[in-house]
Length: 83
Image (tube, rainbow, N blue to C red):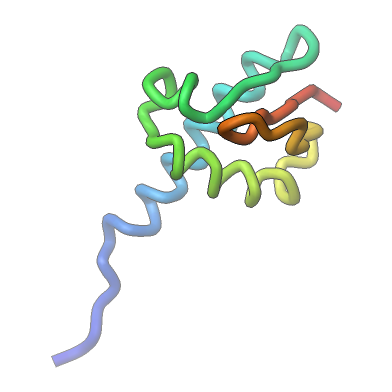
């Protein structure tokens, strides 16, 4: 019996990341975007926690976007702009 990877795990994570990245690119196309994860969660179909974790990852990997933690008041506000 051989060990197998769960085929749904990796594509699902990539799909979530791609969905958030596409959303950010579209919204930041005309300038800057400021948001809290909980306010866009329904639009991208992810939880606020998932968005927060992905934003940290995308901050380093999305070279066409400038992503920064902008402020913290009851939740992180993210600033995103197109490079």
